[in-house]
Image 1: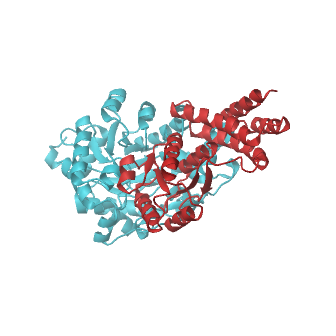
Image 2: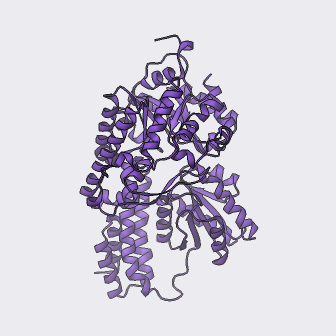
Image 3: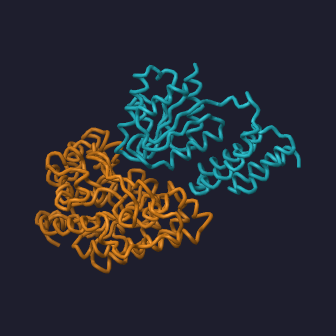
Length: 338
Length: 217
């Protein structure tokens, strides 16, 4: 390994995510990075950046340019796959993420991957932006975020109905989850073909706040293993992000084969490290809501330093950063890692 | 079947999430002359109380709560038309909704279910509710509580706008604001002028109870 000061930000972050790094803990983000203050200054904004590859790539690197956060991270929502599978989307505004307006399927039997899945909605825009980043910012880690299988399944059916099915119609749950995961895998392969260094999968609906840890192990874990295999056979880095009290499922998350786990401030890093050992590595867990969004730069620095002291491998927002987060707080996050 | 057996049957079937059974016990309650309001409060609501306790200690999860709620509503649909006038003096009136800009309503629905089971009269405004609509509805029905939730950090500032609007309408003293949702906290609630915060649906019952007392003081 090269000396720290010779490493590019890409090398630093990828090594840290793989658990190979020695020395400084880098500040990065594997979750959503669009903030209004940065977008306005670079002249590329939501909602255009959700479907225009050039603008998407610019917003993806905005926090590196404006604050030194070592990341080129796209896209900025968890609706790309669902839209390509038939969901209607509200595209949102400069400070409002796209959201699902209508779930496309009522029954499990209807759920299918469209033959032209990769050419629908915004998928080609994400792939084109990935290629742009790979070409334009080779020294940054190109991180593409995707929707996890359980969350995607919930988007397709409606999460309440889908959760009820976990008790009432278990067969339907498996059926939808199978199709959703096939879509996840197909999309992941296309992202890797486009040259992404890291695929960061968020599966918030699989959080213990919604489903039991037992169901996580029996329903979701096998799917995540398939996904992590898809990523590792291509020698890319896989990150799994789950919100909330992920501590309850941290051992099962660790057993999915992802290189790194991205977690929120509700997880006690030191305790989690004790449970799972040094690998997978951990990314996070500075509170996106309490600290980055509503706290002071000093509070951000303090929390980031605490995370580093507790053994975090990459210091980052614990969850998707809020669009109205002050840029100064992102700068504070970066300064804590220096 | 005795009155106790029927009420316990309603409660147990609610916990089990068995809609056929709760409907059956609801009919049985009416047939044997049990007061419809008592059947809801001492049967179904008792069951939901057990559900919320089980959720609290990690024995039940969201899917089970949703199933129990279905079972509870199956009985309530049968019992409600038979409630005697004047009997249902509501515990309090609540306007509930997911704040403007956010469509994640599962948490809000859980809170509504629990408050419903606790005897509150509830106006559910749904999700992505415009700030003005929320405040105006509270004024219109003289709500004791406005309950607002958000799952996203993005939309937290809109909660403050609801509070500000209640102040502008001059009803903030008699209408208390309860907030909730993953990124929120009691600290945040106080910082925007809301009256209380609940960490989950179970906690909402306790907080709502306190707020009604304050609102009517």
